Image (cartoon, rainbow, N blue to C red):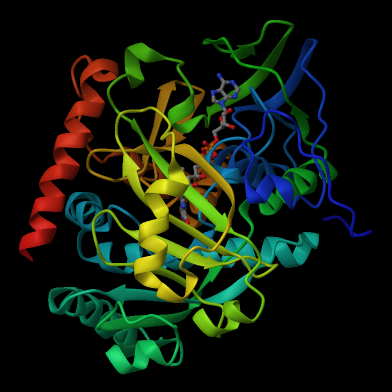
Length: 437
Ligand SMILES: Cc1cc2nc3c(=O)[nH]c(=O)nc-3n(C[C@H](O)[C@H](O)[C@H](O)COP(=O)(O)OP(=O)(O)OC[C@H]3O[C@@H](n4cnc5c(N)ncnc54)[C@H](O)[C@@H]3O)c2cc1C
């Protein structure tokens, strides 16, 4: 809905999601035609590209963002909307970054963990972005071993002075927060947040535009020209820049020689129910976002208009699931039996970029062409952290970028063919481990 409470018509190419049906406004940026010259050309209009554009434009640089479809068309406009302090690959990061950071590694990761929250909150406030931003999250346990993991996170949060923001709950404690019998405990965290990601992405794009950034939609970049003055080339146009950032995550097929075999698509499905009215307050009276401790987890929250938005599972075939509602309905009814038979109004799926060791991939393709990708299902906060790191790097402060760029990544030979079967085998292995722990 927009300010006059009229539904906004989403562009036809957007997935028919709840998010597309509840836009504040639809974007309408031109197709790139002819030649343009800027300081930085960014490929990809998701959170990574748009957040970096805002950071650079705030620093006074002339930026252009080029997007194949619409701003927020990819995972950034179709995700679960959970903003959590979970950096997917933190264990691997800790191990590898110890080489460059030594004893400082724990502090580095801890501060990084929360940086995305600060950026999103201050950006939403500064640019007046309406995106249903709310605080409150439960990380739920389904068995005793999950509680050990949550207790360790809780203890670290206490050591770091977050006692007013975290509470460890037993089974009865969870039932006081959620109308579900499924869990034996949870970690409640009120620093974590949830939001309408497509409205955030479009709001940030408008913020970048207000700072002078150029945005182009329906403009697929077909080639990056490397050299002292690099360029990005589309069918109808060309942008010359001092620097280029490739931020297409798993959707781009550029620079295969260097990037093939580094990142793989996992398809995630999400549904939203019809508005639940009073039942919404019954199942989730505190309006918390929730996910559980399993490797392949369920995640859910209420939308601004009181629907249950529920996501879960993932398939590693690289293809969309055909019956997402059929797959997720049993999970919803297992969590909330009181929702048995509830109408499902929207279902959609999307690819997320998975990296084998789960460490975001930051690097350089040549002297002035950068890339940043791969948040393995935890990209809402992380993409904003990376936007800041990339903007700093592009403007000469390489410290955090270098720490990430020094991390080693597994490159799967024949990546485009073998990567997904390997990922599927890996996830199967972790699911087996899950059963044993
Ligand atoms: C179902 C699902 C649920 C998720 N839930 C959560 C969650 O609750 N919390 C969380 O933290 N993370 C979640 N994630 C992950 C998160 O959404 C992503 O990590 C993040 O949005 C990635 O942002 P991005 O900008 O890097 O990529 P994207 O948003 O995918 O954007 C990449 C863009 O680049 C464009 N592009 C690609 N190639 C080209 C080209 N050649 N020329 C021009 N443009 C190009 C694409 O069209 C696309 O719009 C979820 C992901 C999925 C799929």
